[in-house]
Structure formats: structure tokens, C-alpha cells
Length: 274
Image 1 (spheres, rainbow, N blue to C red):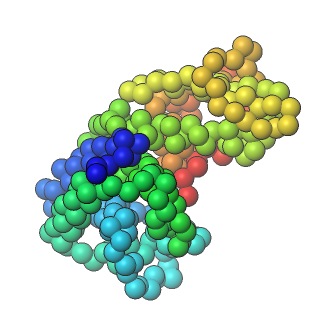
Image 2 (tube, rainbow, N blue to C red):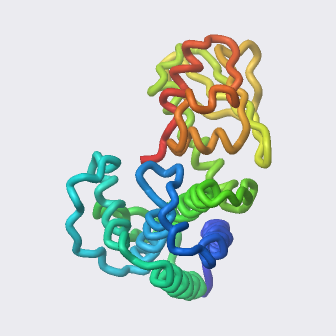
Image 3 (cartoon, rainbow, N blue to C red):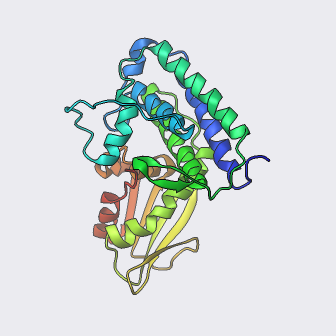
């Protein structure tokens, strides 16, 4: 038995991103681990701690028994508290401790993936004691690790891999969230269409069509006379959708046409990551 073909793209994307992360942080001096990243409240050390911690959970390791400090301003809900546990428990780890644990975790996960023979629909542990399918878990890891690779690249001044295997998975996951963003969160008019024109290392043109019942659907066909059109580059799209920047901070990189109030409402609700 070997990895199911459905799961292979997620394994490949995870491998590509985790190797990039290992290379990025492998030679960092102690002070560089404290650099602030675009991920709210997290340093380079925190991002790597998060990556290590969630891959350990994929391996079935028990979660740390740890009490969070009360003054973590960026932790405001249960999901963030859950994610912060693996981060805070490593906050005082040294650079050699971080790189050695990362290396060991990657070795273990690579071994797990080589021996993975379960069906994509197999139920596994998810966040907050939920159950998700193995496919969902692996897709989420591929998404998460690529986004955090980009956080680290931004913090360390090493841009790249905006069109890597993980980027394509991130594109598909973010696009799947667009109908809700447009139709429900931004309350786009019924029987309307909104176009997203994204350029750069990954390019796409997508339409969200809102039907008479107010439901949004994602289409590849361009719309004639859309209610609004948003044109932006791929990196800005990702940073907005993952909550790394505010619409105001990247206003010069987003071109809006048509109903400007609707476009502004979409951008206000664009962040979809927890």
C-alpha cells in the first residue's frame, strides 16, 4: 500500500514548504528568531513553533499541558487559544532547540507519509477535539505550512515560492471561501456578479454570481456588466485573505471598479483564516 493519489498533492506541497522553512531558519542567529512576522502576535520563533506543534499533532503526539499567560493580546477566542498552546510552550526555546526539533519532526512526518495507506475519508483528530477526514487534515496542513512559509519569508526578507505547489492549494482553498465572503458577509445584491481579476505568479479570473435567493457560486466564466470588479496581485490577495494586512494598508495595490461601496464591503470581509 502507498499514499492514496488524492492525498499526494497535499503531501508534495507540505514537503516543498517544510523544506523551504527548514532552509530559511536553519542558519538564523538567536536574535532573528524574535523578528515580528505578518501573522498577528507571532515572531519567527512562534510561527516555527506552530508548524512543529501541528505536525506533531498529525503524528498523534499528545498536546502539551500548559497554562497560557493572561496578557496575550492577540488571543481572543477558543480557536486562537488552542493554537497558541503549541507556540507559548516553546517561547523560550533557543535557536538550536528550535532547529533540532523542526528537523526531527520533519523526519518523523516524512516517515509517516511514506507509510500512509489510509483512505482519504478516514477520520482523524482535528483542532478543538473535532474529527476531520484525513484529506481535510492534509489539505489544511499544506495550506497552513505554505502560508507560514510566506510569513517567514516576509519577516526575513527572502521572498519566493509564490507559485509553488502549496500556493496552488492555497488558491483553491481561498477561492472556495469567496462565495460566502461576497454573498453573505458583504451582502452583495441578489442577481449580481462580482469579478476578481488576479495577476502575478498565479493568475486567475473568477466570478462570484449571487442568485435570487442570495446564494453565491464560484464560476470561471467572466461576467458581462458585473456589479463590481476587484483587480489585484496574487501576493496581495493572499495577504488580505489570510488577515496579514488591512484593506487600507494595500489600497494602492487593489483596483476597484463598479459599485465601490460593495467592493469596500467585500474587502472588509476578505480575511477568511481563523
